[in-house]
Image 1 (cartoon, one colour):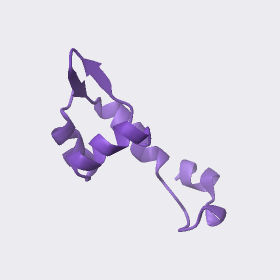
Image 2 (spheres, rainbow, N blue to C red):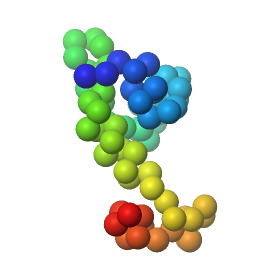
Image 3 (spheres, helix red, strand yellow):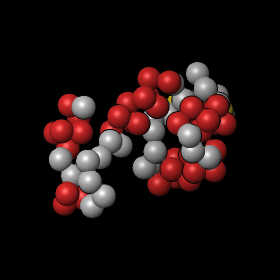
Amino acid sequence: MLTTKAAADYIGLSASWLNKSRMSGTGPVYLKVGGAVRYLAADLDAWLAGQRRTGVYAHCNDNERARAA
């Protein structure tokens, strides 16, 4: 289990971004263990895989090709 700081380093974003993404529900899945937030590497990998894109604009994305790559 990774702390917020370690998870941020793992995915190459800031801890602040992860904190904000938890509030908006747009980031990776996380765990609450007691009062602490923890991330599993497998959940971070799955979230990263879901961010793959083939184009800048949504209407240009070939999601099937992105998933297959």
